[in-house]
Image (cartoon, rainbow over all chains, first blue to last red):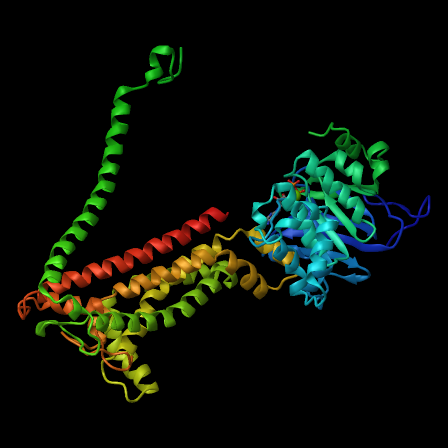
Length: 283
Length: 312
Ligand SMILES: Nc1ncnc2c1ncn2[C@@H]1O[C@H](COP(=O)(O)OP(=O)(O)OP(=O)(O)O)[C@@H](O)[C@H]1O
Ligand SMILES: [Mg+2]
């Protein structure tokens, strides 16, 4: 598996790509040779990377390189796509998420997700936050939990007087923070975020980024972003993916090019493709 | 040189006059069709209104509300509650059949069926929606009443409101299912994903997120089904068993008279419709009442549908 070379914790992969540094700290995910197919089409190929606890890991790369596909493997959301098929392993605290006996519902209770477009339920603000705990059988004081969750998402002060109003009446940025509150209400172990700020203005984006920093002590966060500055600002580790021309099929398959400390990815990347991308020289 | 037909200068900004005239003509045609349908609706109400008013002028108004006397137009007994109750019983039974079947089918088709299964089932549902009601009327007397109604309730007669109601329910099930399914499918997939992402199971997602989000459309489907049930004539005329007149009946196992069947009985036997003055005209009064009931129901359902559209 992992060859420990040069410095401890660093692995220079022998494969033609993937310069990978293992993150320090306890691992949450250990992805091993993961490939994802949509029908016959291989969308991502042989990804190996590991994600550490209480860190923010950013997935970056050009459009179509499989970031969303990859992210949705972590909580088995790809199960909902009929044609999607996964090969390889994702160990979550040592357990393979794709083992037969694993229940995707249990996976998603521990590994929450915030989507690109805010998608609050057409219910009240309160009910949006209470939905997850309720279905998980939460018995404690719901009012307190709703308040705490909204506070963590930096939304409480803006909505505390209108908890019974419909969530669809909130602004886009407020809706996205509500989705984050809804996600943290079930106290997941990991939060997956797929371009959570792409529909938000810079102020709302700043709020979401701040709150990611605030909550990272309690959660492990994996974020997909197109915004280089955002990745550089918020994340500890960054994985750069790109789409490679695939010989068998006339389509592009996503591969992991480089995975390292964010600082290193942005200042001194090993792979030329990474450098071209992060400096904006990529098409 | 400019390409063929491409504008070359300010002279051409007005465009082609012939094409504009053609545009106007086409608009007139569509406008005409729209106006025509409005005119027809007005004519219907007007034709009902004249005769209905004549009827009201001929009968004692208090006599329109004498429950327990029944509906015997040829004898000049016009008890409106009798036929309203008949309509309520039949369409109520129809809804008891169609609401669970129709909504169940809608939820199955929209949430559970694989695309391939839906591609097969949806057209079958639409064929069922196209079955002429006279066929269902005969189905009621040849199969539903002897095999279902009389098996469960041996005391039931050969004609009864129960059999008619069940057949009406079968008739409107496809309508309820199709309108409800449309509204379920119009719930954005992002909401389902949000729910699954929270660790909800399929049934929780369906019942707690998708169905509530589509509730307006589901209500609309039920109201449309109800107004179709109230307006259904042929099945009731064949299977409910009241030719001409009927006593005031609540028990669905007995024959009964609905508003529509009462009108048919008068209309198809027009040579016999002499009786008292106003007997024939009572048909128009009942028709007017029916018109307004369905109008109100359709307006209400239109409101619900509009609320669905606004939400997303
Ligand atoms: N449901 C699907 N069915 C078939 N192919 C899909 C599906 N979803 C994604 N793909 C394909 O998989 C590849 C990777 O898509 P993915 O959405 O993961 O890219 P991405 O890196 O998230 O792109 P973006 O930055 O534009 O969001 C693309 O070629 C895409 O066309
Ligand atoms: Mg994406």
